[in-house]
Image (tube, rainbow, N blue to C red; front, side, top):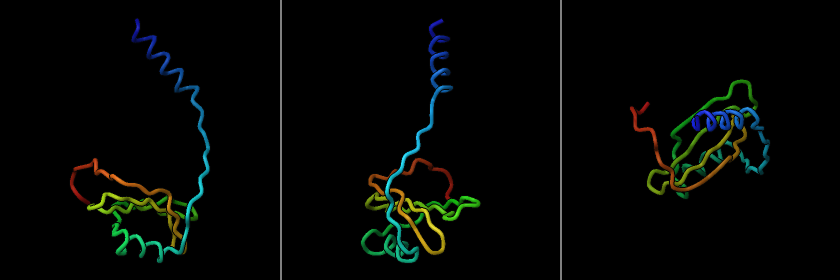
Length: 100
C-alpha cells in the first residue's frame, strides 16, 4: 500500500512539473580564434564530441577536454561565430565502450 501512495505522489509531481526558462550571459568570438585558443598551449583541450542541431542558425556543439588537467569547455558554433556555453574541471569519462 505504501508503495502505491509513494508512486502516486511521484507521478502527480511529474505531471504538475513546470519548465523554467533561464538566461545566462555567454562569451562569443570568431570560430577560428576560439578553436585555436582551446587547442593552443594555454588549454590544450581537444574535441571529444560533436553534435549537430538541424535547422538552427548556430547549429553545432562540441565538447573539448584536456585529459591531463581534466578541464573541459562546451561550445556552440557555426562557420563564423562560436560561443562558450560552459567550462569546468574534473571531467570524467563515464562511457567506457568502444571508441568511435
